[in-house]
Image (cartoon, rainbow, N blue to C red; front, side, top):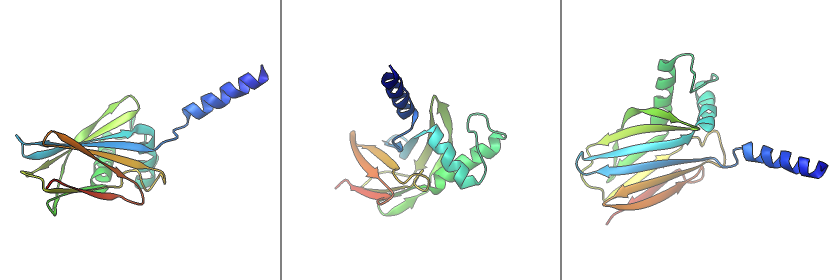
Length: 163
């Protein structure tokens, strides 16, 4: 009985830990809008920790002391930790905002002025200063084909060619 209780406690404790640090970024090319539509999907608890380290103050994303300060900090963090180069040229993105859903935050960026992609280079260092084992998966949907990148602390940038 005691061993079963200990096993249950350990299993529950282990389950509650967040053993993986992963974010997912979807990059969708819109031929109609001539733009990249980017969505970052990040675990909320990890993001709060990274923003606290980044901003220097404890931050509650769900119930912030100031929504304006929270939103400005999220925008600044995302834009400083994510870069897109298309055909050798950096592309400035527009931060559109974010949504909270369960245990995740979705951050949205629009990158206008993209007509054709011969090569796309992405740097994604989101959460990497906080978690050594952070993995940022990037899925690029271009010409109805999805290609992916796995970015880590050791390799924060990758390139995909379409020629």
